[in-house]
Image (cartoon, rainbow, N blue to C red; front, top):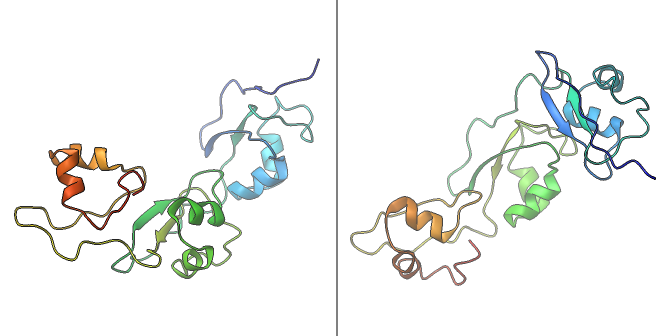
Length: 183
C-alpha cells in the first residue's frame, strides 16, 4: 500500500510566507529555491515531513519567511502592453509566456527588473507584451467606450457583463477579433 500524500501541518507560525501544496515533480530543494529560502529552513519548518527526500503531491508545507521581501515590480509597462501579471507559486517565465501567447524572449525583454529569468518568485510583477501586436480596433463605433485592455481570465461574456452590453453587441463592435472565444 503506497502513500499518496496529503500530510498537512497543524498550523504555520506567524511570519511565514504561507502554505504550499506539493505538486508532481516537486522536491524540497526546488520548493526552497522557488520561495527563496534555504533548504534547511524549509525542512525545519515542516517537522510533519519525517523524510524530506520523500514528499508527495498533496503534502502541504509551511514556507518560512525569506526570499525577496516583496515582489519585484517594474516602474511601468510601456503603452501597448497587454498588462501586468503577478507571479504565483509554480509559475515559470516559459509557462507565463505560453499562457499569454507571447515568446519567452519577448517576455524576458519586457522585464529588465528580472535579472535571472530562471528565478522568478511569487509576487514578482511582470509586464506582458503584445506579440506581434495587440488586436486593437482601428476606430470605435459612435456611442461605444473606445478601448478596454483584456485582462487575464477575461472572456467576451465577462467583459459584456462588466459593461452592461449584450455579448453580440460586444462581438459586433470588435470585428478585429476573429474568434471571440479566444481573447
